[in-house]
Length: 274
Image 1 (cartoon, rainbow, N blue to C red):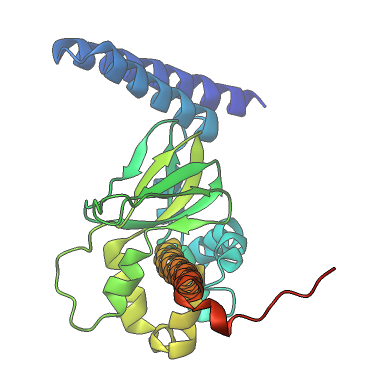
Image 2 (image 1 turned 180 degrees about the vertical axis):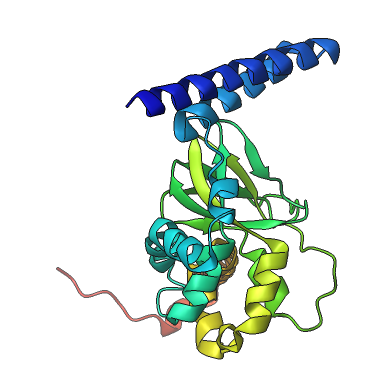
């Protein structure tokens, strides 16, 4: 207990020094109050989550087998909850877990903006994010969704990595993703995605790609937009048919009246007395 308290005291002192250095730097660079407050919130959130421990460097310094087991304990259930990876073999899941890095985001932080290059896939542990797209700025198009624990974003990287013709340029984001609350997640960087897809050919199977498309936010948005467009076309066609039928009925009624007015009285059938 004494050793723990001494370690905690040391980390607290390190945190105070970092905060002091951060405040001096922000004052020197004349950052606006809004940016200063965002920096303070992030530092506070990071301290609450990690207590000043750099988990990534701590795990990286361990032997390979021990590091793999710890990563599996921390990440395996999260990765398996992603439909794309739930049926993958153990070797591939270990490779994914080993390359995941912890990521923290504070409220109102933009993860990525529509059109910007995507540099990581994000697997959400907890928190809520808003995902919005205008389909490249198309007039009248807007789609919004909410991402939460067990969801993921940045799936454009997987399409990019699976395409043998893709170059070194990262794919543009089809959505703007913003943290609505504090978010804890694991991130898989672009180069790691490229490495995994090159090492494990099973990811290139049609079944896996269909599964990816079904659960992908990007593909769901496209499917929804196509369905909406088809429904609008169907509605317009039905409306035009109804209007045409009404006009035909009106024209037929007028012609009947005209013929009856021009018909001589000789050919009219006399009315029967009541």
